Length: 379
View 1 (cartoon, helix red, strand yellow):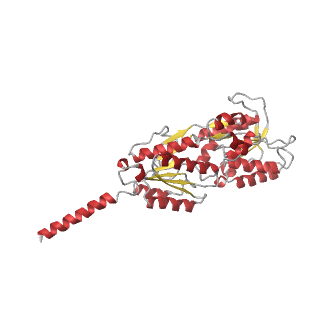
View 2: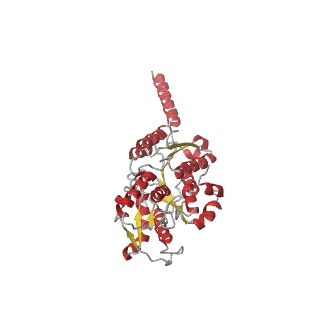
View 3: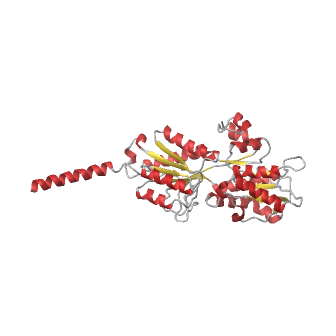
């Protein structure tokens, strides 16, 4: 009887030991530092394929991770919250060891992030800070307040109120301007807006700039999901409601190139873009190839270049650090409070690009070719 008991106990312990060894392979509970890259999977959740910027980001992260030997599960959510939630759920279930997430809605993934935390899967918030969750381990992005500040300064430069070095320009105004912001469910939107207003507010206070529509609150000027069509419709409505007295728009603060193109389409349809009625200065962001061509052709005034190759490299570096059970390098541990915690971040530099900057910033750096800029297409 005692022999049978010992044998049974030994067998049970053996089974438990095998289960402990074999059951650690999914979702971060394993000792990833001792494993080969080919045995590890990084889940990469991107918000949409309607923007060339996000297509480029997903591709860059995937290629850089695969070049190091990791398996990559890259998914796009088509700007749909339930789709992204389901995709992240599947990544967790299928054993992702790290998650890199650019959220459709920065407040909508709390359940998924808790499930990741329960399995000890590190979560890297990619460019869009995920809010309202303790379970965000790291943030890779650009200095988003400086992006907004650069957009505001670019509008002032485009209007001639300031020079490239920030000194006083040759023009004095007053100029009619209109303001556009990004999607309110994206944490970056408020940073862009606050930064831009820091640059513009003194000129609004002096009367050199006038928001003729009086729409200055972020809730009034937001653009859901950053959609070009939404921005175009709002610009059309502004032209109809506010500029039907013969007055002209002198400048438009736009936070993103897709929004900029919608705004420009509305302006062109309304007769702007001629010698008698030139296009206003329109800002942008992301240096999308279609907008780079517009800048090169003198149609869009400027954009903010954020080198997504460097952003992807930081996402890879942070992923590797977590897999090696190390702490990723952060250069900002104070600025990005997601409502529950301050998330350590690595922020990258940005650059304002006007027509004279296109070749040096975008072509010479290898981001685009001269032929792509001329065509306005990458393919």
